[in-house]
Length: 96
Image (cartoon, rainbow, N blue to C red):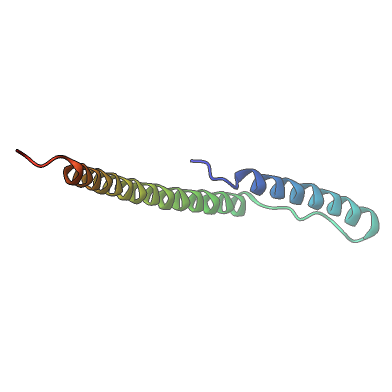
């Protein structure tokens, strides 16, 4: 499910990625002892699992919220229908 601010989030993350790439190239040029950190497979997998669990948790929370909002919408629709029926009954002519 997409949220309304997905585009803004992705634009910010892309800008951050470009900025960090630029910053890393500057550090390699101007800092003589700079070397890019090397990441192993295990920390990389742990990071991916962390991101996947966060996304799964966020997706479940959104799904629960959508279900509760759908239930509330059904209740409000039913209540509106009942009120419209009551209004029609009040406006109708009395029996002869």
